[in-house]
Amino acid sequence: MRGVSTPAPSSPRPLAATAPRGGGGLHRFANPGRFLRLTDRLLPWLWALAVAVTGAGAAWALFFSPPDWQQGETVRIMYVHVPMAWLAMGGYAGLAVASLMSLIWRHPLADVAARELSPVGAMVTALCLATGSLWGRPMWGTWWAWDARMTSVLVLFFLWVGHAALVRAFDEEERGARAGAILALIGAINLPVIKWSVDWFNTLHQSASVTRISAPGMHVDMLYPLLVCALGFTLLFAALVLARVRAAVMEKRLRQMQLAQARRQEGAA
Amino acid sequence: MTQHWWHVAISWALAAAGFGIMAWLAASRHAAAKRRLALFGPRERRQG
Image (cartoon, rainbow over the protein chains, first blue to last red):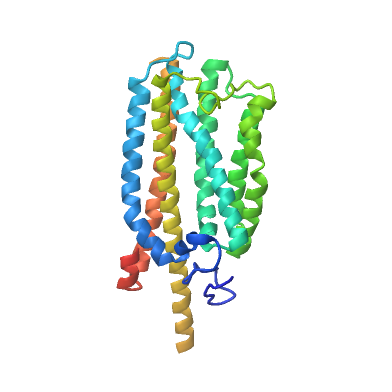
């Protein structure tokens, strides 16, 4: 690893004490002390903002937005389902970027971020599938259909779970991170398939209504609470991932210190 | 409560439970790491 202090071949790859070259300004955060100081200040504000925006969005969606003329009250599931779908795909794009940074620049924080991102990504994708199913039963008369959109999102769920399992399957963390990065990049092919599955195939799932290029096919009374919910859940997702990365950085630091202490004791003996 | 509202309530409850459990797990990991790091001295305690 270029420009990074390496204690011993048998130890886990350390977070950089000095920033490696390349990769732009992001390498500033490869310093664990700087990252911990920054997140210590940022995280409480991020959590507070996330809870406030999600709470406001939930109240708006559940009590102040109108029922749909066709779907009735069931439309309120959309305010969870759609943000989860966006986060599942956007989060996976983030995983692919982190994997690319890990493979090209060997950014140590990118490995940690990818490792901590996948369980959260798996959770939001599972929520997307579960809420879609809960919406589908009263609206379509079925919990599930093997149409292109639902099947490709199920594949995305398996990719998230597969990544989470793969990076933890190796004794050597670096090998796990590399295998996970390759899986994440190959799996990114699924993202355009999910996005355009409703256009390429004849699906039970409806086509895009918010992200249409022409104009959103949704009344503002529903669009605005949906956007507030999406912002709230995105902030929650970011806070959760950042908190997990922060905990992982501290755990890694702890392992390094325990290893150094054991070496000192071994040397003294 | 109608079936529609039941499905709505379960959806929102699942989302709240999912994010809540994940946040609790992250907080537990953070607290455990902070506690163990503090054993190594004041500098580590400050950074945790």
